[in-house]
Length: 99
Ligand code: SF4
Ligand code: SF4
Image 1: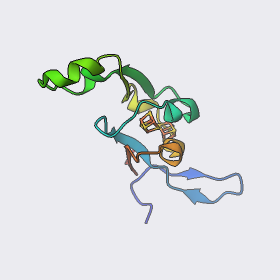
Image 2: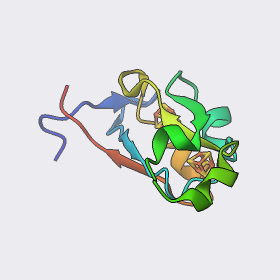
Image 3: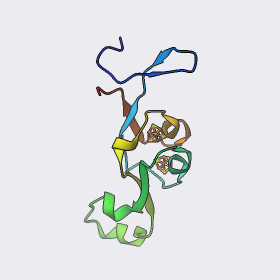
Image 4: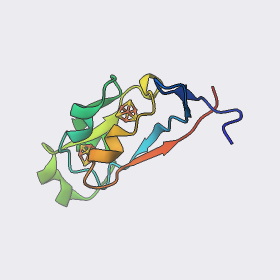
């Protein structure tokens, strides 16, 4: 079942399969910062929404100060899924991955 994917071990020696963050849905993110605060690594950064959503609609110009979370360094993720546990909008996608 765990063949080919990165596995970890508990202190008791049991294998577990980390699921690494692969995507963050900027269209549902409310920029609350929960995932940034809980992440033990340096994976996320807050950016201005305009940097994430390329929208020509002028109505969105009023929101130009709204911040949205972005994945800065996916390679630093340890697959703990803490971000998914705290996100109120289910923005993150995680996958078990091969090493
Ligand atoms: S799975 Fe864990 S290490 Fe990876 S981005 Fe989420 S909180 Fe950070
Ligand atoms: S926890 Fe979810 S809604 Fe909050 S900043 Fe992170 S991705 Fe966005």
